[in-house]
Amino acid sequence: MARRKRPAAREAAFFDRFRSAIARLPAGLIRALPPAEPEALARAEAALGRPLPDAFTSFLRSFDGADLFHESVVIAGVGPGAPRALTELPQERADELVFAEALSGDFYALDAAGRVLRFDPGAEERAIAGSTFDRWLDATVAREQLLFGPDGEYAADVFDPAGQEVVPTIALRQAERALKLDPGAADSEHARGLALARLGRRDAALAAFEAASALDPGNPWPPFDLGRTALAMNKPAIALPAFRRAASAANDGATTARLLAWAVRAAVAADDDSAATLRAEAIAKDAQLVEHLTRSASAAGEDADDEARDEAIALLEAVAPGTSVPRRLPVIPH
Image (cartoon, rainbow, N blue to C red; front, side, top):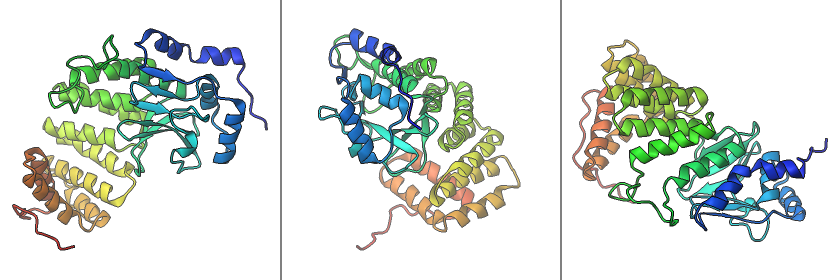
């Protein structure tokens, strides 16, 4: 069946908010390319061996890719002038189209349901970053523009003193602004929870993590952060089911085992009789779990990362009580 084409007038209106942002923001913050030629679209579809999703085709008919906020996010195109070639992005799954890459190295893909997914290279887990392409685009622009001043440079005081992380007050505003435009974006709800936790607003963070988990039940990390925050609040009865949900959503044995170790820790703290069963499940998923935790604790100690070391030791004590942690890792010959 031939794909129904969106009327040209509708396509022009489809990205009104994006066009408005290009016009009002300082020059260069959003660099959008002219529309893709029909021949270039056809060549891309032939190279990929499948039609492009309607929403992304509509975008390319208006803009042949875009560089958002100094390569914070680069949306691929199909013509010779595109900031990134769509056909050069790693298309690993037949039911997803990877269409953009973030400065952090994350990729964005459209799934068969039209949602935008974010994932780390090589990772199985996907986070729902947008309920639709156009909502994701508008929310991304709204989120990123908070970091920049009227001169097009980074605004003062948006990063921590080390310049590595956005300060939590700004991160919270970013997440809330994105959620106004795309309430179904679990990734933004998760980010909101992380910002609230950093601000010490833990009860609100728990609610945000719960909301993110409900929006994206296949992603283990919102329930993991829910459990971790609840455990820090001395609420192991809340943490335990959250960690179990996280473990059930994980896609590989080592990750599942580590998440089950957190569940064991919560079960021990809650004096729950499931601790022994969870301990056995964790070891069954990863026979080297105790060794991995021991090495994590030792490596964190060598790096003077007390928080990571204490965390690894707490997991180790829950999974294998009485295990000693060497001060330094043994040298392994190559």
